[in-house]
Length: 387
Image (tube, rainbow, N blue to C red; front, side):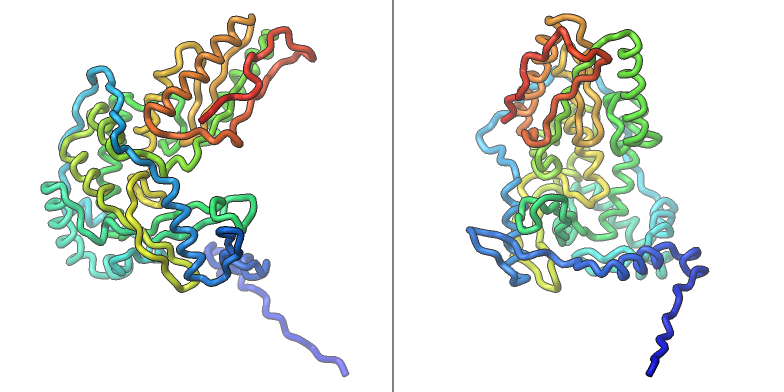
């Protein structure tokens, strides 16, 4: 007996109109398990969702930085102009609400983007009042200080909690106000050319590709002149989670961010809490004592500001930045160039200690670019000492 099975073909026309359905279809065909694997803690594998959620939350908490009894390094007096006061209009809020993606998940306040958008005449009026009052008082509603964290696997052993990254799901209304602050702050930074020129992360008209193209072009020019180039590739460990709040606020002031914005950001970062959501269960609530939350609108720009002075520590070599990735490099024409490159690596380590950040030793590498089979000048340090 022969059975005929009618397999329904996917609707191509539907995919063309809604690409999200195409990716959902592909994902369903791959039959991947999207849950979190059993997690190892104290030599035991845990499969219970609640236990896994608390293990991950504890792991994320371990990355936080403490500033207790540690003095903030003093920077030279600032020469940067003060950012203009932020004015919030109903028209601007209306436009932000209109552009809300209603497919985005709701935050801790459970107010869906669809609700805000479908009642835009009322919500734009109410949110304009709330936003202006929040900026005026420098206070953030309690719901906006909490985040529902989704763990995202990076790479390596899926059973190791340290191989997951926390992505914060915050309130949509808060993100709208963050957009307003972020756009005003970025305008101030770009207009006054405050951000480091060779930082290509999270910036308009710059990307990973633009950084790579300009770097390769520079390396090719050195090669054409038969000049060796030594590169030190460095990456921060738990970069976004480690940013100390007091030091961040100090740098915001130094770069001319207005007191109005700083007071709001202080409230936004202070008294934060988070809960890990995992397989329909939640972890315990824990305090967030450092970091700029990944998944927020302000997070990237705050991080750019925090590491903006890293290049100032280097005296001899160039450094290229893409968010938390960095490359220190220098043309090598004599043994003294190797010594100068080593001095700049030590300067970067000093910056790391001054500002309580950490480079990840396992992600730091040395690369030599040269047309010669045997190099005359050897980089002194073959293994960087990074705390």
